[in-house]
Length: 445
Image (cartoon, rainbow, N blue to C red):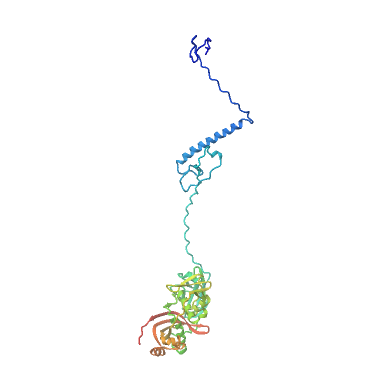
């Protein structure tokens, strides 16, 4: 190799010239000739733009991966954030995205993108609505009954006592309510309401020149009854024993037999529950007026009109029950009222083998009578031979029935006392029951 300073020839690889000592440089290797490429057919700048987009996408992916790792350190994310996969079974997994900006350059098949959706705001606790207090319907009408008839006025003699019965509708809503009774002129009438407030005994204390207003009030509703006085003495029999002629003996015997034949329990009309009185009507119709009962599947039904007819017939009462009202028949059964009828559970026929014979009767001087009686039961042979109780038994007096007893036709099983009042039903003289008391007796031959 030649020295560039003096031109002397030097061995190849020498570091300095042997002639002048100048440093020598190795000859560079020849550069490879470039490969020939065809000339481009379009401008180069679009490819430069694509490269920029790829760089931006790569940067987004790197930021995404870093952020994913940071969020994965926390088990929960804010609503709308994207976090790494979780094993929480309640998490919502979004489908793979098609957005190229979120797609890694080298996607891994096991990657998942989990989107945390906003949880619904917890319901604001509300106070449970207070249970509404039961309300009692205020009656539109307070009705006042004198004996068996609804009246707004009546005439009574001085010293005479008359019973009044107040009813509000529906009556069952006022089982524990009381009616208030007042008189426009104190000292003219004497008021004696019963313990339940449903009825009131009104006694005329003195004659008055104009009618006296008796007001009955219930739940803000009121009704007025005008009481007139008169000079005539009451037409009731005077207080004392009453002679039991044949006709009276029969009428009182057969009236009370309606109760003894179905083993009616002790009762005071002022406190008697409605179910006891309605049950009496049902059994009475089964024994004496089967045509008043209709049959509907496993039920025997009595229309409200028929029920009220016999409630008035025997007790001087009527009822207008609430639809759906329920009553106790006994400790195992009940009956109800709906669709204008009373529904009783159907029962097979039973034998009613008792009748009543009155021993004595006395007037109380106010249109009522106290009656002492005994209940008899037919002997089995007599019962099957008759059959049943022959009508002739209702005509017997105490002496005549004793003969039957010693002939083994019947025997006394109960004693009792009842208070009744006169009543006319379908043009015939009969009675209504005010109280009934019964007790068992022992008898042996």
